[in-house]
Length: 280
Image (cartoon, rainbow, N blue to C red):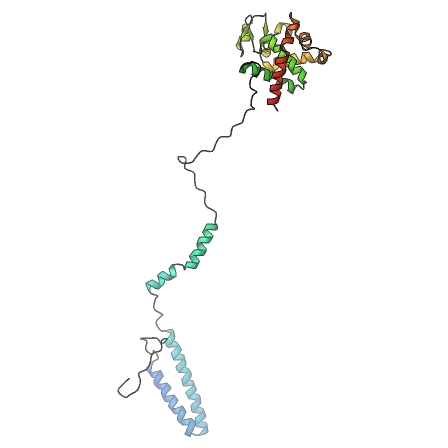
């Protein structure tokens, strides 16, 4: 409150502080004079004079408004935002950061190259070999493998079980189920073998002779080839399915001891059964 008991002009919260009226003084004075004349003529002057003067006053007021607008355009721009305000605008609000995290988490994770020093190697895929049947009836591993080769070859040829038993029993008698080379044929010892026999030029599981037309020495030292030769000859024997085992074997082998094959029948039956069961 001033000394003349009038209140000071109150500054509203929204009023600008520290800014002066930028309107030029000559414009303000002209406007004040025009306003006073306008009020006098409206109350006391002649009608024509009042109209003319009113028109002039309105023009002056228009000029005043234009000058005021020009003064506003030339006014200083708004003060730059404070550094703290700029920092707040640069930093996204928590909501936008949350959306960004969600979008990032939804995006696919880039693949990272594996460290060879720390990566556990993947287990190697191995092809499992069919389980061989365990030796039966007193045979060792080599004998059992040869018997299994006879059974496998016979099944590939489509021969019945009876033919397989005859073939195994014949090999038991001829070579004791070993792939035997000949002591009188040095060539036969150049091939894998499991012993040496001295019965002329007889070789292999069935002691077949190359001189009798069974095949080349190298071929007869192959258990699969030798088995095919025996079973093919057996299939050509008329009525071999109804013969005794020893007679069927003798029809193929033409041995000096035709009855010796019979004693191996029961063992051969058990070996063939074991091989067939393992191959299922």
